[in-house]
Length: 583
Image (tube, rainbow, N blue to C red; front, side, top):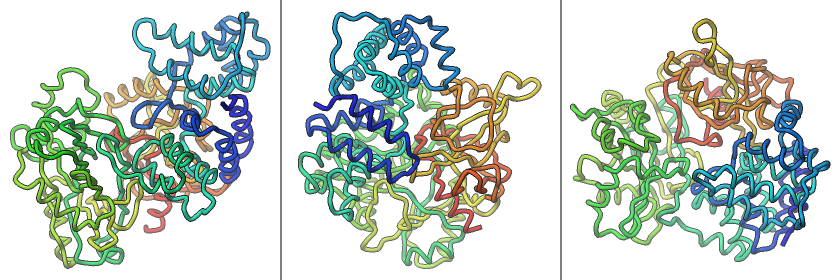
């Protein structure tokens, strides 16, 4: 079994460079040293998790518990440990220093391995109940008592969710591919495996044990969420037809919650686009699926959950459905007050057969057959096959009149597969927002905040927002937004963001702007604006720290908190650069 000090040494080397290719090479060399039986656990540790993305959250135990543990380890008071933390801004560095001078007397210590560290992390992540805090301290102290200084640094960083290697999924995917695959043209099978399972640990285990042929066998499986296919944007319908040949399918683009529904042997699972399980929040959808599909063995469909007016049945804005997300109590009452409908627009798996590689025209036929004449909870998306620009424009106007965001135009060519996790020109969205101001709303990550003034002085009055650079796993600032929030919003966001408060700028946030406070890049909100402009103050798309970047001009919060998106699912740097180029 690989000793953890080897892992720590490689992580230390990776930290010493900002070059993506060098980091990939370092992590690839580390992966090569892992035994086939431990590689799954090793990959989870590099992501700061103990299981697949959709099964667990990052470890992220409270910093106060780590400070208490380091106090027990070193004999220093918690105040002294906290003072060192404020001085360095990194609890990992504090752990490394204190480990050098620890006075915790132990009868024996053991050599730490990947298996031992993972095992204790698993115990930490699953500890719950009244005694959970003491148990977390116990398992962490057990590790740190045996740890060498460098091991302590990365154990602490991982356990508080600050290792951050997991933010750059593509770095880890490329490293796994580089470690096991000689032909770079086959690297994409690793990403495909991850997109179909949302479990990079499992993918690495398959690759290590079965090679590239094992990856090729990975197919969708009911009960395991698939990363959703995404659409490109177009400024005009005329532009759309330069990418998609007519005739094409045109569908309503609903203002709702992207939801993946899985049916497996009578069990129903509902997943958000980020892979979060949300089944319990929508019992009426679960009941409707079980009622309508008693004879179907298994199925995976993609669709949009949309709130409707309880009295009129008309479609309602997304903000209504957000009132139901995350609720643990009064679910039946809220389902009556805020009813929803599930509009299905694609099928990925049906009766033991994968459909992701079949043309969209074939997939759509199955959807229309299965979800035609359904009850008021399950419907297929409203759509047509259009042969002209005029038909698309007419259908777009109908969609807007029916309270939709706009339309989706989809290719029905032979190559129109369901490309999980990818954004491409097989699907193109055209929204009513495009007719005025910014060509589309953007989903940005809150990375910092500024206190308000007057009666808002105890609240955050404005937020620094960033896009996600997929290539290097960083968050680049794109605007400062304070418009669109009412007093209730600011109270809610102050409470929410304090959960992610840190006393330093996260190492993956690239910013020239100093804020009053910094946050872990976790929360995503939707923003609109007048246009995208070149800015010397923001880093989105900037090639270096001194160059100008791109920024949203006159940004405004739309009122939509994107609880369904992880930070890495936010609008990317590449997308904003493309939007600027189209202006």
